[in-house]
Structure formats: C-alpha cells, structure tokens
Image 1: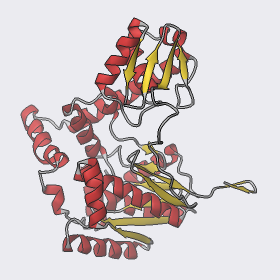
Image 2 (image 1 turned 90 degrees about the vertical axis):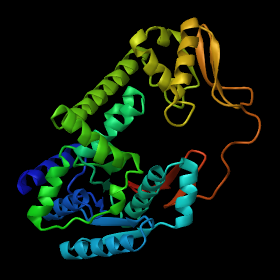
Image 3 (image 1 turned 135 degrees about the vertical axis):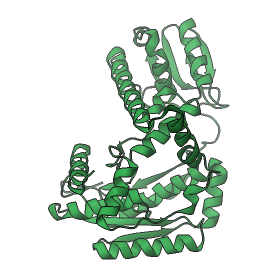
Image 4 (image 1 turned 180 degrees about the horizontal axis):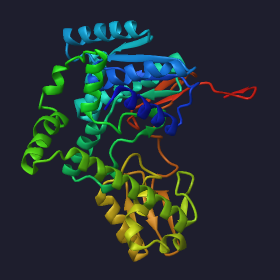
Length: 367
C-alpha cells in the first residue's frame, strides 16, 4: 500500500472514530514496524491538525539491556520526527504482583501498559490514545479465542474504539506497515520476546497460522478478519434486538426485571439476555455454566443462581431479582476505602482494574 494511500486511510479512520483535528493524540510506540508506521503517518498528518501529537514508550523491564536500548532508539526516532516522548519503566515487583493476580505474563504486561498509557494521556492532555494493532493482530485474536472455545460474542476480536483508545490500523495488514517503514527509511526494532513460543500468541503467529496457510495453500488471516467482522456485527444486532424487545436497557441501575419483558425474547436471543442480566451484577464475562443454569431457571420460571457466597439471582414467576442474596446489606463490603486524588488514578484489585479521574471543564463549571 502506497504511503499516500495509507495516510489517507488512517486519516479517514480517525475521523470516523471521532478524533477531530483539534484533539490531542498520544501514540504508543514500542519501536516495532506497526507502531513506527503509525507514528510516521501521524507525524505527517500533524501538519493539518491543531491538536498536539505525543509519543509514549514503556520499558517493560523484562529484557534487561535490550529494553534500555529500545527505549533509547525510540527516543532518537521521536527526536528526529520532532515528536515529544513520554517514557515509563515498570518495576519488577509490580510486574510479579500483577502476574500472580492475572496468572499470565502477557495479561499482566497488557494491563500495566494500558495503565501507563492512561496516565501519560492525562499528563499531556491527550484526548485519545492510539495503538498500532493491525489486521494480522486481529486475525490472531479471533483464532486464539476460537481455539479457547470462548463465547462467539468474543470473536469480534479487537475493537477499533474502546473508551479513549483508538486503533486506526486494524484495516491494514502487517505487510503494509512493514512496507511503509521500508519506504520511509524507518528501521523497526526487533523484540526477541516476540519470537519466544512460550507465549501463546507467538505460537499462533509463528507456528499455527503459517501451518494453516501451508495446509490450505492460502493466507487465512483475511478470512479470520472477515469472521471477526461478522461476529461483531451479529453481536451488535443481538444487542439492538434485545433493547427493542425488552423496551429497556439492562444496566447496573436495574434491580429487578419484569418477566413480561423476558418472555418476549425468542429462544435464539435468550442466551444473550441471560449474559446481559448477569453482567449487571458481576464483573467481566460470566462463565457459560452460570449462563446455562440461569437459562434453565428462566425456562422453568423459578429458581436461584448462586454467584458467590454474598450474591445470587432469584427467578420468580413475575420477575427476576438481580443481585439478591443472604448477605445482601450485611457484612463488610468487598471494597476497601482509599484516597482518590483528582486528577489521578486508583488501583482496584477487587475488580482487576484501574480507575482514572480528570478535571473536565463544562461551561464555567469544573467536574
């Protein structure tokens, strides 16, 4: 894909996702071909924008001297392009603690990376955080979730827009970003950990997908991307259909759902409705065992689904009570009190997440 065509595609994608010319952008730069291509494209587009472009690089502290060399190389590239750079360094103890909680080094580094990016965006006043995920990453995600027998709703893969995170390269493939770097004289950094097949995504990238390509004598990545788009579209349709049929959104403010709304839902959408109701009272995606148990209760018109020692859902003939339980209103809260400065960030390990707050001017008031 030619430089001008790729720049135009990224510009159009940013506009479609809501990034206006005056918005500040923070781009995550690891030094690989994808992030370097995105940085190069944005630095060229910056001439037609009034918003400030800032780069961010995080040293994960897992590759020793190699990590420090990468950070220095990214700094030099940013200086050459005239793009300011925000850097960060993870503490090994924090990495160990996060890994022990999430039970995966990949998941731990991902969580800490996005936490760093959110903090950096706050510091520089960036409206959006941009990452270099592209279509091959999407294909790997769809296949990974398929092999893990995850819910089909997860096959939509990586979202183009997730909160303040935008991924404007999901419509192009790795070969396009590598070609862009070659044409622009950008030399991508080689991360040795990307070759280590102890990581599941690396096994998919270097063994599984090439093996399937060879077996079927075609590149399966575009097919996986197309599957992801179909799953995302079907998930969106299911959500809209449930909104229409129930006449209400099942959000955390809903304490009980009238059975009349549920009875209007056809069997093919009942699983989606059950998941949505469960998500009003638990964090994350519910296990399918819980979903199936809940559906059986809905079909019988009576029963309880125990979510924890403190929480359950009760199904009656006329209503479904969300978040009831023997300990409701009693005993200590699972959340401990903590100080939360504004602007600033607070860690909530109870939820496995960070919450970030900032001041936003609305008229003459400050929130």
